[in-house]
Image (cartoon, rainbow, N blue to C red):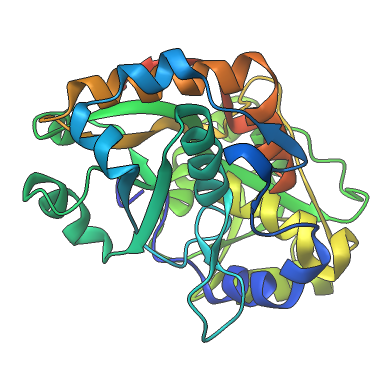
Amino acid sequence: MNTLIARPATAAVVATMLLSLSACGDSDPAPVANGRVSVAGVEVVKDQALHDMLPEQIRKAGKVRVATDVPYPPFEMYVKEGETELTGLDYDLGQALGAKLGVTFAFSPQKFDGIVPAIQAGKFDVAMSAITDNKERQKVVDFVDYSQSGSGILVGDGNPAKVTTLDDLCGRKVAVQAATNQLDLLKSHQAACSGAGKGKIDIQTFPKDSDAQLALRSGKVIAQVLTKPAAGWVAKTADSGKAFDLVEDPAAPGGYNASPNGIAVSKQLPELTDAIQKALQSLIDDGTLTKIYNKYGVPSIAVKEATKNAAVD
């Protein structure tokens, strides 16, 4: 996971986003009167008590400086190719958090490997970029965790092969991008297939996710394994949602081998961490978070509680 999920974003997902974004409803949160913001069909209103929790410098500036690595669908995307307007799950969540806190979450593109150093240097207050919360990163930033994401299974529309779990892939042809965590997942599951008296997964590797999806479209494989957020976005947008389905395994709602993704916050701003955590919990409690995730095809990876520094490594 880049200890994210599986950066860089694949060409197929980026292409799907560019072709399909305009058909997926409001892509960019629209400001409304009195400082309120409309996100995923929900009007988010400022909570004065949460605003008062913010560090003085944030309240005076009226904004939180946010670093993000674009594109990485469905978390961060450009509304139109060649332009700078942003959209995506992280962007929408940032606008909702900002509205709840009574400040603006101002996003700026930043190369992924430079995000944490930029926070340390004081160039940004936080980062929202599908960053995996791990103990190594916790040494230099704090995390407010907002999703659990791992590997998911993409199948043809209507799920003709009746795939419901990883076990259903045993003895069958499955597509996966080479040199990914998803390939490692399939390899590690071979022992379970053998132990259950089933044939091993016939793993078909491809250089790009787009190639794997072509194989799935043509019936050369019965499924593709990729990151669950990407799988959900492709299922929602490809051919207006008529090409693929996302398999939902109740035993792995966030995906297989899921890890927490967190909003990285400067350790110099502990009050900001606390305020974001409480604002996120408010968005969970009123259902806004689920609606944002549903907009991008992955409601199952949303957390039920806003935790802090919940790394599993």
